[in-house]
Image (cartoon, one colour):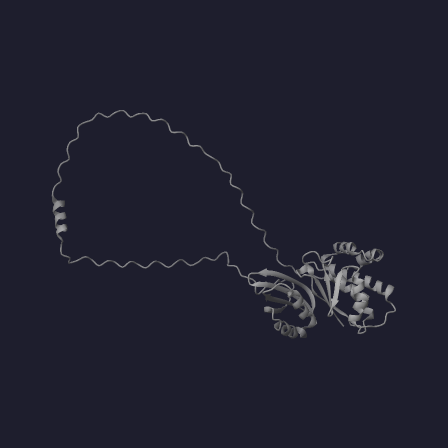
Length: 329
């Protein structure tokens, strides 16, 4: 199994996660996480998927046929080394100094006025300059008058203007950190399980407490385990003698009616749409693993192929309009 990072550029944001997630799920990849960002070049999608290495070429071919994608890149995920999006706008470096403007062209010197015959005005000017000037008349002596004492000028008034302090610079954006996935906290799930069974279907507040009680890396795996235990409990209570059937029939007869006690759902074309998921409300904190585990425990025993696979296509917490799970047997 390998993890691949899909970076794609598209002009439209609406439905982008669903289209790319559907291609990844059809090629046998499971969604790990995804992000959407707006850029002056368009909409930037980053999606990390997990699957078999031999399916990478099939995934590239499927994405190349997706008309809404302008361009994309697929590369292996390197732990601890976040990769900037290839299509993100680049800003000019702060240390860049523009080159000096070109020097203006030198003025062409005027030709020397040599061998020019003197004009009459020039000769008259030379004669006048050689003639001695007439003496200036002697001014009569005038006794100086005492200076009048001027009134002192008023001192200037100073007005102090308090300038507002400059606004603090914006805090730098924190770099993306890779979250290490941990195994489920079985002790926390087993401790909460009796309360989940007694309060079912009003269990959403209890699941929120479970998210806060375990470590961040064990959050999704613990939700998945809690969903499996609740789904298995419901199957043994209500459907233990049900005959084998296909995925679509199992969802229509068992899965969808049970899920509607927890959320607003709709199932069509091997895809489960969860609208306004009450668990996926915080940005970047998908909780769809609970619903995947719930269905694995509830309809997994009655699926005839015994190979039920559930992939998260997109999630409300990552910018999608709704959560979508793809079911395959």
